[in-house]
Image (cartoon, rainbow, N blue to C red; front, side, top):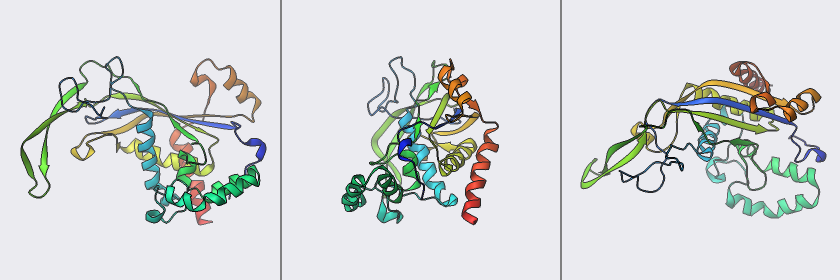
Length: 280
């Protein structure tokens, strides 16, 4: 069980940033929930008509990746369902309702008692991505489009399938928008005060995304395949006066954070340390 000094609560002591280019290998879509200009199902666009890659979609997909990898690192993932996962975590509303009084008692006993209670009743994934009793350590910014927006939107045909006969239903054709392959976005992931297990879990997810993953809707139809390129890891340790000064005075996001070397070597070390602690 980790212990955090009461004076450190809310203090930014360390920051880790992963930046990369997210490249779509296939067409992809994140729906707007409305009809498009020339289709039945539109994609999410900004005010200038450019495709949007929301930070919430990135964070949700990253969480899903971390949930699938957590057990390989000896970490817990509640899957937001205590009965299904067997993991006690306040992110499951029904479980939290059973232990709410104990949480209130911990609050009355002081900050450290409250933090200890949270650690004992929150899975490792929710400690990183947030829970009803603690803010997320990890943040994903909206993807910044790097590709020219001209001609990116395509329209494809779709049909409604009869699940019994596995054939198309007559007169139930529709069309939907998707965005062209090779679309590129700048990706930025920030983690505040990461614990060693946070860095190992995030690193494992970055390795998987670098090899290839999927994002958005209609992935069962082949849409949404992507991979990462140009991955960089930077950070700062605010206990170091020189790094603290650089962070405060840096004119650009890159200037403010120290490069941490090759991303593969950095995260491989974190994963190795985690696996060694399991074997130990």
